[in-house]
Image (cartoon, rainbow, N blue to C red; front, side, top):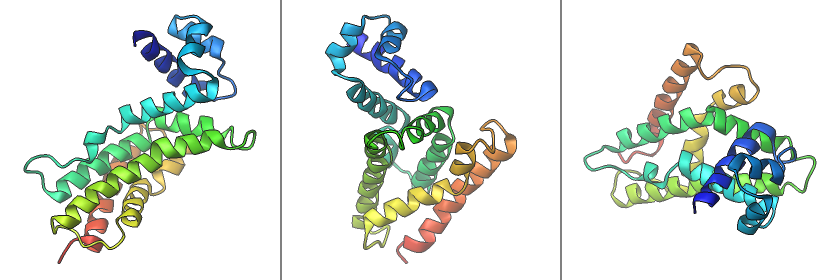
Length: 200
């Protein structure tokens, strides 16, 4: 298990920094301090290693517990907590690096890598968000006919144009103006969502 964790950690660092094509199994083995045979015995091939690295990274950055309401927490407080976490995440070095790495490969392959990232990242987040919304609808806090669509709407509201600006390198994550905009956008997204779906 220690070797597997070391391999995944090395793969995450290298895929984010260099992209899929320019990350070799030799490089992963060297970074992890194991043999190339050990890497292949754990993951089979580079595509499988990429999927597992992306899955582990997504679960670390966006844990399932993020979408669970805490005892005594209001719905708005829960949504704000989720919104702020996603706002930080979507502009983080790890997230931006991963999206750039995959986007650079889309025209060179059968787009399997992009599909992997989509399933492990945005799709998983949407499904977890949908489950939370369904629980709130059942509790009478929200009035939503299509929770899948509403979950997608909420997550898209959080992005605004900040994610694209970071992706294109127009703003630095450490810029005070950027961080202020990010927090303001997260709060505005929650208020807009509740105005649309809160039970009256």
